[in-house]
Figure 1 (cartoon, rainbow, N blue to C red):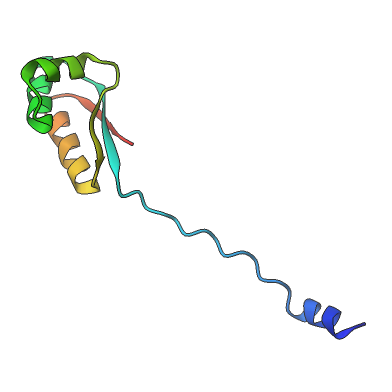
Figure 2: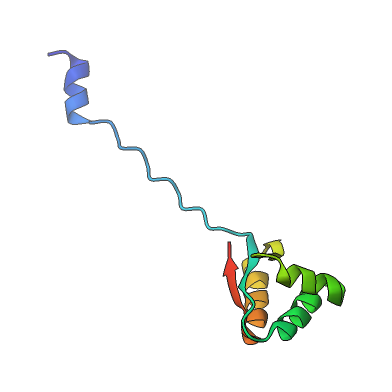
Length: 93
């Protein structure tokens, strides 16, 4: 038995440290479902995006539109709350 083998048995290699969990810092706010109050949702989207009423309507009518991209967790939660208050279903990605 050599010294190297002996030390390997006494001090086994350390397991790799678990990867640190990276918390997501940027979110996309996606409109999953408009709900029953489409006009109210359009108005909220208009206020959030600064788009014209017509552009906001087109955005709301498109399939699963992204309302805001790469916003902070707080901003995403605020936008989500505003949209959900008028009956929309929102996803944060």
